[in-house]
Length: 251
Length: 251
DNA sequence: CCAAAAGTGTTCTGATTACACCCATGA
DNA sequence: TCATGGGTGTAATCAGAACACTTTTGG
Image (cartoon, rainbow over all chains, first blue to last red; front, side, top):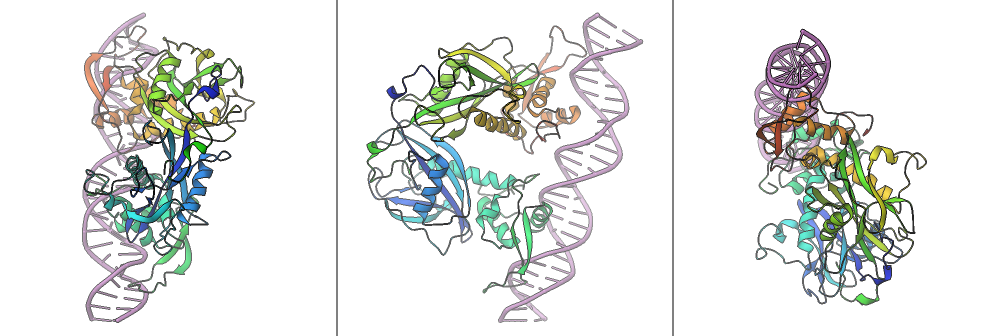
């Protein structure tokens, strides 16, 4: 009930509150997440989610947007940001009691403009989630700092299910985009592409999912018939949902 | 990234961390939520969600289960509890910086065993959510303390959508139950009952949603043909989802 | 003309809807 | 036998799956 009356509020143990970010993008057809390499202990040298403290005058969303700009070097981040969940195990940070409000962000393909390392990170890069070995034992993949593997697993599940029933897949592509671009997002996130014809029908029959432009794709190395270009529509939810095909990846 | 290296962790402003609970049940056919009346300032006399501080050795889930037992007086709470979201506006508590990790709980029908008031509450009762006037302006309904109206709105939306694609509706009924009991849960939560025949087929054809017993309902004031009794099955998700009928309530 | 990608059509199947109807029980 | 719920059956409809097919471009 938010600081119940009758308690001496100052008598309670202090917590630090941070935000952690799971920023996803599609990079060369692979769903990828932004990680930073820690420079200092604890977990020096390990890869970790970007994040930082919530400041006195901020709420969590504000802090997350600020960190997103600071740590990724993206001034005008144009994607989607939402709260994921809060992680509060007493021993999750060896230094002190830290509660982390994890967030989920969807960024358009950022292959060219790589993120810049934050001041407290010696490196930052996009990791294809498949290379992290989150599903199997730890030996196979990358050992993340803190409880970030758990956070990332939860975030991945949220991304995979969220594009089923929302239009958020469009947040992974730069405008304007072709329907094939959008379909590649589903393929990357789910590990299997939805049927071409059914996908087109589904997207085009959902009013407000995408809006057609007059232009066609004039890309350089393009092959075959040029595709019509689209922009994001105003719809947010899919009714009924886009069904995820059986895939070796996402079970 | 959970207390980045390079920061002096002790130099950061202290937060208090609490858990707030939105505990729902079906009471006389109405979806109801447990509220407590605040005895002290701030917001003395106002209704608020139950909750309390996270203790030094607890994570949020543990604190939520503890508060659930303490504030509701239910020793062996048998329902479902999950994290909802975290609320962190800087001014949400006038006394100090308090971040609240809100939770969502589903309790079976508790008409008879009413909750006992916690030590810091002068009263506790189940409120039909319709009587709270959350949708319209504040004049119509009950003014809740802090940002609890916002939390409750979010919780309601989660409940309504969650019973679409999970088997959590069974957490609102005591075992054993009839299919009509279960259908009344959907009617109460959604404001409109799903079609009788289609509902039965859906529930019975989803393996693991419910398991039949050999008994029939021998209730006292019962009328008409006695119904078969069921228990909860092991399934957690519905594929495809139970479709919510058009209703005046849930739009 | 051929490869490659865009885009369209078509049939089959399964689930949902919107009903009407039958069954079992207590008063 | 009648009211009251429990329980079953069914035709129309709709959406998705699967797959073949046509179209438009660059080499």
